[in-house]
Length: 323
Ligand code: AHR
Image 1 (cartoon, helix red, strand yellow):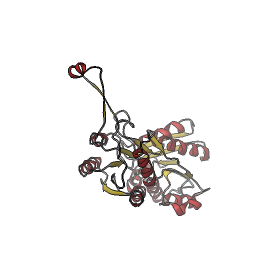
Image 2 (cartoon, protein in one colour):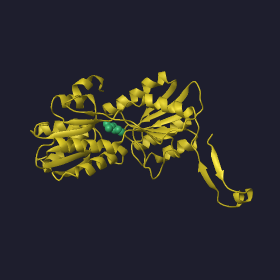
Image 3 (tube, helix red, strand yellow):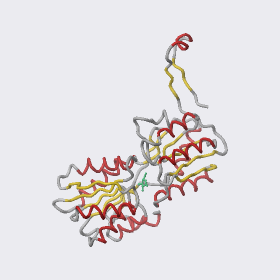
């Protein structure tokens, strides 16, 4: 049951006036097994598949009865999946919200049903839902910092006098797309050599990244740098560039985020410059954080994941662990 603290002086005042009610987070009982909900947003790329597998692999070790779903790229379906999990009586919800705004009602509904919610990998609009109030905590990377690190690597490693930059954005309205754009745009603006001539969504998908790159190339055949918000779109862009007769890694620099196997291979092959890691392996962290919460520990609003950076210097030694 949800705990409510009623702030009010007298019974009379309570009965007669508007009462200020401060909500506290739903507690999590300590028990042997937990019914855990993990409503995945889509399964159309290696990152999502690795994240889902991480939850499945953790279920046994953490004594979870895991209920997982796949919203197939629809925020509305993801909201409905959360509804269904609430109806099935989950003890705890690990939610990767596809977009920042549409999932807020689902977060609030879980809280109202007394279910502690942890946001994993993506966040929601902080103006409308807050850690420590509407959900326990956000477990994930600093997406602004990822974009900034890509920009700083690009500034350091691009050798020309001026660069035409194309940006392939992630899913519109998602926290990684918003933040990776902000981090990159702010940092790259500090070097006058770089001009972003196009910034369009490829929805974090390889094929959409390829299609968008094909279209953008018609208006900007002279592109020097492609910054993709994830590796799948970067690989799609490489395909489009090669089809257009360009030589990724030689006459156009490709920079990206995630650290997938295909991206590390592209770095080893000399087609891609850098990928800043964004780890999908959230299962063990989810288990540990949930146990801390059940033990009554106060959880920090943001359990931050630290990310590495992969370049020619270390791609070969890390590809064996890539997904
Ligand atoms: O939320 C993290 C992002 O979502 C990953 O970078 C991307 O590949 C995935 O779809």
